[in-house]
Image (tube, rainbow over all chains, first blue to last red; front, side, top):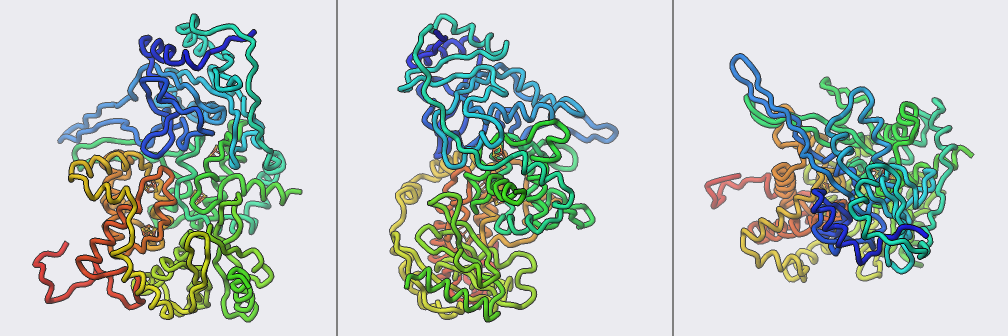
Length: 337
Length: 276
Ligand code: SF4
Ligand code: SF4
Ligand code: SF4
Ligand code: SF4
């Protein structure tokens, strides 16, 4: 017997959570795009998506965020700090790759100082993940040593029952247990079997790739130029990625008053490393693409002992020129044979 | 012989004889439905070239990659009519020398691919003229008609909702052959003309600046629309602006390599007393 949340009871749960003061967020299709957004009723949720186009990163690290307002006076500068809007939230129906993406970024945002924008939202959010029963050509969690039912980063893991009847509930953290206490009487004990998980083929040998990347001789390899020739240098892959976390700080306003914002930035852009002198240490797209791969699979794990990729496949799914991390690692995997 | 085979043979001849240094075409993609840009520099590799109805990306933008044409050698490229028009604009705007471009022209109707005769851009002028003639009558998509019928307020809220999705990834710009500026105005920060933030105002500014800058230059190849990861229907803006320019100035972008850019030319007898 396992604890089961039946689908027809989900709307009751949404009501309960809302009355307990939680904002309920989940996968939806709106304005011709799929994303995670706040909902009022369970019927708005779309569980048929393999994975929403946008990742849950947006809910913790939005594309543009005010940090402070300033006014420059004759003899002083007034500043007014902006903190993220607070309030408890529950994300119902994250995917394992998205949830693990947030856990991958925790050490980064808590390393030299604790990023309060990130952690306030992390601490106030319960992530309820639904294991995947279907995958598409671009899903690659298994290549990253994860699985369609990975628990990393999740507070609750739900396993879909056969026939979309509901989900088996696995409580993973205290935060998850706390949120599910409010719906304890709605859950039922049952022996309904879980539906089979998605089969996600392994696309490359991660360890072999990492070894190749760590070899300094390969830094100047011709490979980088060949693989990235068609890259047009947009930030589609960066901005859809659940783990990409680079940002820029910009002051907006006039000379005397304005607002300081934290905006997403991408290593794909030439401007990312452009010096004031005009010199650019990463002057070619191949150097920028190399940085993207090196950062995710060499520098980041070197510092935080985890790869900066959860295998969601968005970078390859959405690339306008059909590139992406997958192809590059597949090719590196071949090179290192 | 299929067009794909004909073009592979032509690519092989050109590469082995040294007539071109590179062929930019399409190759297999990461799944059966996808094609990706490929760059062939050796005659042995021409078998990688694919030509079918999935070859839709306009490849002309790669021609202005830094340094590609600076050795004055010729480069061949697979282009549909929109791509050929883009070559004319790039030549008219002094971004490339059309003599250096060898065109492998093709068009796709339904799932049928046809070859377009010619090699140099001038040879396609009849085809381009016939597209221009057909342009005002061409059937427009339903959504376009719907927006045309909206009141200005309704139209504004339609676009507000669409632009709210923008994440300023600049995939639209990077995918566009006409967006060749080495430093886009939005990347300029001394002074900062346009907000870099992706909030409502910033997204509006970006999309409006781009729409204006592409007016009379856009060839409606659809690269930007397909590249946009959040599915903003950019094609509708491009189409509206193209119609406007055609109606007001009888200007159809990319008819010849000496065509005057519509927003960068001035006539003394212009009936307007004001220029934007
Ligand atoms: S890999 Fe694709 S999505 Fe990423 S920067 Fe290059 S063109 Fe854009
Ligand atoms: S690098 Fe690509 S596959 Fe990995 S997490 Fe980012 S978007 Fe997903
Ligand atoms: S604006 Fe879009 S449709 Fe027009 S030329 Fe550029 S990429 Fe093509
Ligand atoms: S491609 Fe779409 S999301 Fe990206 S900047 Fe252009 S309009 Fe915005």
